[in-house]
Length: 564
Image 1 (cartoon, rainbow, N blue to C red):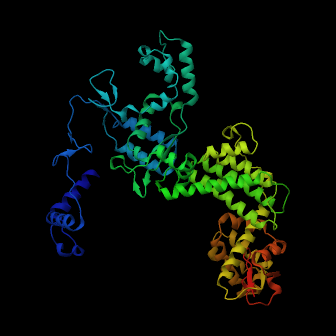
Image 2: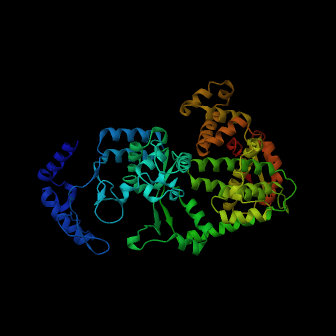
Image 3: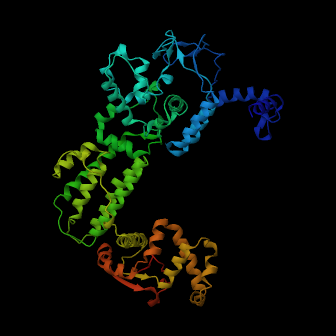
């Protein structure tokens, strides 16, 4: 392919001509037109020339002249070795990568790497033991330092002059008999290393896939046995500042220390966690960071107000059920390193549930004792995100010790009530529909009637939802004698239901089909709430008992709304 590609490029340059859509350059040979177009790009579009190293001096960003040269007796790492490459490819197949899409980039890098010049004469680095006039450059020198992390706090117990290769062979590989060192110290260091290794995840930035992250896979494969190979890596995105890539050379940076000083550590943490998933680029904007402080203050208010909550209300079971769902979803998101999604569940999700809960309470009520359960779990869920705030609230709520050591919330399956959640979902969606209609009414409404879909439409809903091929569901339904008798009414219902199902989340469609909520009973119980919301008289009717023109529009989970 390389040969063919070069042949095509050469043919394009030597014999190619520009197409008709190239304006005045139409028909020009490529070799001529390239120069002409270059002049236009420079003059009219502000383009600049990019020179090869052998054409113009290379200037360092510090202002000094840079020199590129081939060094005599250079040392290389043989990443071109096919057997070594295959071992790394095999390892990449086994490890967990977040996000999984980067696997292709790792494989591409392994294939692309050739022999790597790993030494230099000046600058930072470690002296090459067998050739001290050379230094290992930092990228080549940093491939197994995650193993060194595990013993860094104890290695000083061994005199520096005794730290020979035999010591590290024993600590990391369990082989050899180092002399002159207390065996107990060596065994403790090896035990410490094996406690942490193999590491579960290596966290780094996506621009290092092409070097450090792939290098360390090569070197782990070459040095360590199978049972100590890396298990996973999480690849982070890059940081932007007001939409532009952060760059120290351009001064386009905002230091973490300055950010914490100006906005507070918890505010910074919550912004970084919530602005993007770890593997996505985040955009630091001061006005957005400032708004996070208000969110934390709302959280503090919710928790503080819940301390003295007592009693029970009908909607308590719904809030408790929703809390269990939030706990499960945040836990799952964290296990998948989806920190933004985790925060969506643990902060915005719970806050949204609390708003609906308070809306559903009787007038003058401050909420039931379930709010204390929510506050207790909520503090623990947000502790990894805003630890300082949560530690303070934990103490104020009378809890002992640190919340960072408290047990992580676990969803109580016995408190999950799908029927109650589905009923509230039906009410809230209907409230939204009513609000939309009210906004465009030219006069003040006096009466609101909800027309509930008949049972046969529920059967249509179930059949459509379960159909593997929804294009043929009408034909299948019309084989049913009871449906066939309804004629065009049934055919129209199928089309309406199909459109409704496409607009609903799949999980909700499944719940509606399996739980078959009694919508008339649900709205009858919520009638006083709806009357309070809209200050109108509310009537709940079965659509089949009404002669109103909208009665035929009533669908499962979407009653017809008549406002007078």
